[in-house]
Image (cartoon, rainbow over the protein chains, first blue to last red):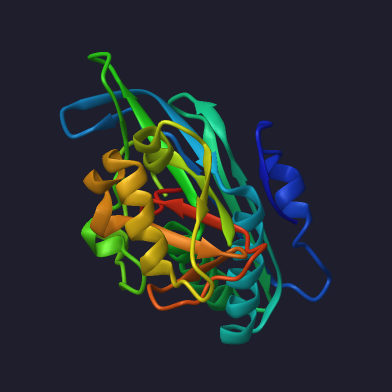
Length: 157
Length: 81
């Protein structure tokens, strides 16, 4: 299951897509819209995708993750359109025989989506302004990111 | 040859349209396309150094050669998640 959708993400369906008898671990990551970033309040994020390339990118990223870690399965669904604080923007599910591989691969897949997959978000703020979110300099293609620096404006992932 | 370019996100806002068709000489490369786009749509210059180009759903560098019928898109750095 690798897709971009305007519908609310069915978290159970994404999780079930990677479950199997061979897996001893299933890791699910949800990126959700964060209301407060520093002193700014986000009222909504509008996500836009170049869908054909985004789906191709998700296929390539999960294929590469399967080369790096012994995964049973991986699934990614990214939502587009207008989302409000608390809404789920992206779900990544990974299964493997043991938990370490599932945790590592899940983080790598999410970091790599943020660097490569052609999806953008526009942030609507409490003061009425709206602006396309620019990625952090540390998150440009090819850069390593740590969990401490991986937060973009208004979204947890 | 005619190349149709789709714009996304801040590039579409700057361009003021979601796509444009540009006439380029045979064997033109991505940097030729970027120059032509910026002269047709000067507002794109505000994104200039950050503008990315994809050809047939893959990132293309400035030296990549364009061919008739290529699926070309132009957009700023991604910010999903």
